[in-house]
Each structure stands twice: as structure tokens, then as C-alpha cells.
Length: 271
Ligand SMILES: [Mg+2]
Image 1 (cartoon, rainbow, N blue to C red):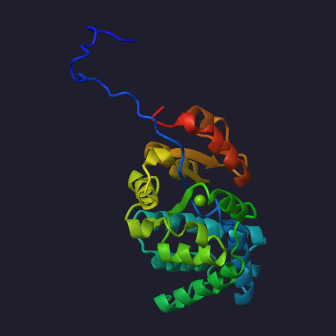
Image 2: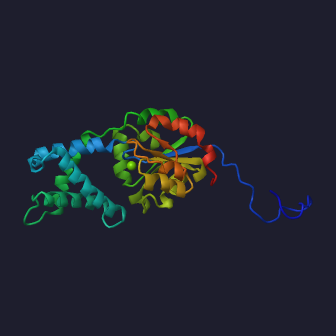
Image 3: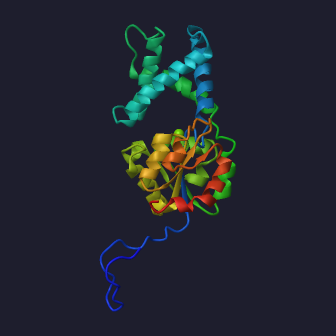
């Protein structure tokens, strides 16, 4: 609706909001890595159980699932401290080792040196890394998208770690032009600056970039609030309708992303 005096065709445009710019097509896609492209949980489970077997510790738990639950509980605590800047990437690995062994009364009475904690974690990591794998739907998606979109990664991790991982699982060639990680960037998702750094690495404005991740708060809401086009990967069907209320498209597999790309343009431009 137009209000006020009729415009004078001889004058320049007056004050007021500019017309909404056409945001243009989606030209880039940024991905979360762990639990989005990379099957973190399977490799973690194998790594822990094989390492506990090597160490003669598996009998300290009523079931393998109980061991995994404890490991993941400690991971969540230590990784939160890492993302908050209280621990380095290497320190959170040593903290996890010490806390885990303490919880099963296997922490050495005279303490555990950094070297010993690092070595214990390395035993776990060797088994884990031997099972590193992308989700089966990841490489086909990236191969299909690569000719039409600029692709990259924004991850709450460290570049060296994720670069190595993506290389081993065969996805790095699709993603290495934009590989932004929180430890190197200086702030984790959902901080808007890390999403904007990903867009800058793609050479695109945020409103032309879709972000896909499995963590609702850090990935989907974070990307939306940074001005990107969000999409939430909900592989385990946990959505209770919140995403629709928040205006976040939801997919259950990566194969559904092309459909979202073809439907999502109207969600952009601040609407
Ligand atoms: Mg993730």
C-alpha cells in the first residue's frame, strides 16, 4: 500500500525502505560434518568397544551399551568445555580419558601423565578411525550437487582433524574450498560469525547459501539467525513440529536435499 503524496517523477527516490532485493538463486551449500555427512556414531562405538577389549576393560560394564553411554556422557561434558574455549582439542581428549577411567576405578592412583592419557586416547582413536565412513547417501549427494553449487563445511571442530577425516572418507575433493572449523575460526556454531565465514569462503552472501546440519540449535537455528537458508537433517525422526513452527525445512535423509533446494527459495530474503 502506498501512502503520502504521489511521487514526483522528477525527483530522486525519497527516504523509506528500499524495495526488497531479489535474493537470487541458492548458489552455495554448507554442511555440518559429524552426524550429517560423516557417520560419527558407528565409528565411535566400534572404536570404544575394540579399545576396551584391548585394554581388558570391557568386563567393567554390565553391557557394551553401558560403556558407550558413559563414554558419550563424558564426551558431551568435555566437548562443551572445548567449544567454550576452556580446553584445547587435545586437552578434551585427555580429559575424556581420565574421567572415563576414574568412573570405572581404573584411574592410576599416582595420576596419569599427559603422555599416558594421550596414548590411551590414541588407542581408542586408532580403532575408531579404522571405521571412519561417510553415510552412504553423502557422496552421491555431493557428486550430484557439485556441478551446480559451491560446497563447503562449517564444523565445531578443528580444520586439521576434519580435513584428515574428510580425506579418508572420500569427501574432501567436494568440500575443500570452504572448510571452516570453530577452533581455527575462534567461535563455534551457533555463533553467526562462523556461518558468515563459511559464506565468505564460498564467495557468496548468506542469503544465497543453504546450511544443512543435524544439530537443531547449533546448525538449523544458528544458520537461520545468521541469515542463511536453514535445513535440518533429522535422521532419527525426533521432530515434534518445532521445526515447522520455526520455519525450518526438515529432511530425514541426504537424498531429500535436492527437493528442498528446489522448493526453498521463497524462505529467503528475511521472510
Ligand atoms: Mg553434527
